[in-house]
Length: 113
Length: 111
Image (cartoon, rainbow over all chains, first blue to last red; front, side, top):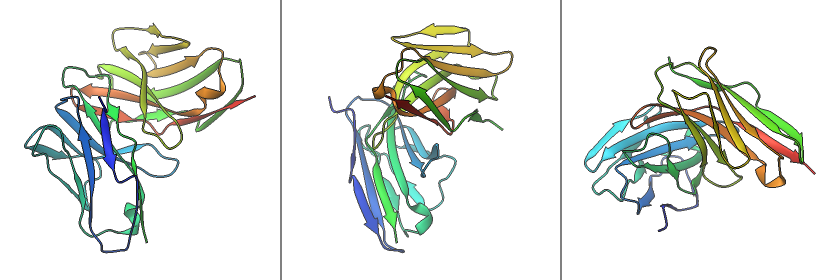
């Protein structure tokens, strides 16, 4: 049981490039989330999904897109990378029956130059 | 609007002492209040939670206190160890899928 896995661990992008951050969970949890964490700051919600085929915007969705074709996968897409998107990105999953615990992946550190 | 905030950005304690990390919240309707620990280079990890109808909950070396009158949450760590050095986030669950995280407190443990 690997929990939540994220790839890649690190990535450097040039301004205007695009990429997809991968997130997979093997816990069969319906709820999944993408957060970004800027240095010395807390977590900001980018997008979330309450189940396959359903996604919604969080606090800071601009510049990102997501899809949820399966319960397991929740990729995050950056279409035109900007320096403001330099951050650490965390994916998380939560059992819809539990309100108290999200399981986080190890994060992807993204730098946009 | 909703917010979960922390009183102190950093806390430094001597190994063996007790640590107290504080948090203020604003949403009286939250069901759960949760503490997460984030070690360097890792994702946050659940430590302990407390339901809104409780005042105190104890775990292994950790205690969470909830004061609904002043909307205050605290995490107490007994006999703090070097392995407790991390950033601690308080969070509140406002219903089902929505959890709001605070800014975090960095705990330094001095040997």
